[in-house]
Image (cartoon, rainbow, N blue to C red):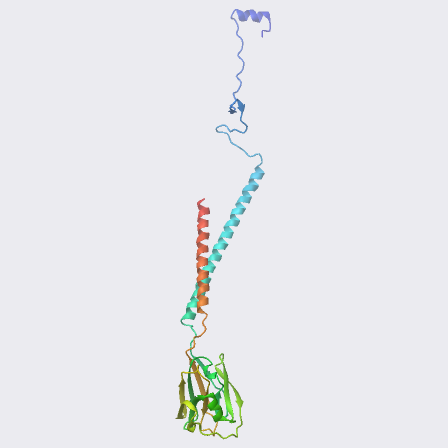
Length: 281
């Protein structure tokens, strides 16, 4: 403690004093109950630094990339939902037009093409080809007699016999042309149809004649068109059917349009709600 006796004597007489030990810096260490230090406890004002800055940077980049990807997917989903809404509106509009402006008519018209036999007749059942009501319009050369009559099939068969006929068997709906076949012999002699008593209804006129038949669904009937039975039948023949409910695809279009429209609106609402929630958080 003293380098020599002289220093000791001087100290005892008060002539010198011992130097004070240097102050040791105090460290503040957090302790847990029992006096044990707590590892990793931060003191006020201290900064925590990562042990691996490169790892933190990579994690931040990956998180940002994920967020961007989610935003892109959300945008694509919202666009698809909007397109579905537009498609639903278009389909619904088409369905509305098909139910109104574009609705198919219940009137079907068939015209007879070139024919040259003395009689034009119909196959059994042909009077109801396109509807329960039928109107027959026939015209020929001016001044020539034009006859139109409808009778029971058995009576008409007996009247026509073996005479040559153009027989209407069907209708091409795309072109509106009546389909015919030719049968019989041209040499057969037949009584003037206006003088026969086999007709349930008939019409006769100079140059033209027309006839309405509202009972095509019951019984077996045949139509006969002629002049006087000695010359070729009139050239212009038009059959008009009505009263049959036409096929219309409007209900299907409207149903599909409503489904698409509702699905698109609901999807859009859900997607926009999620997007607002993400922005708020």
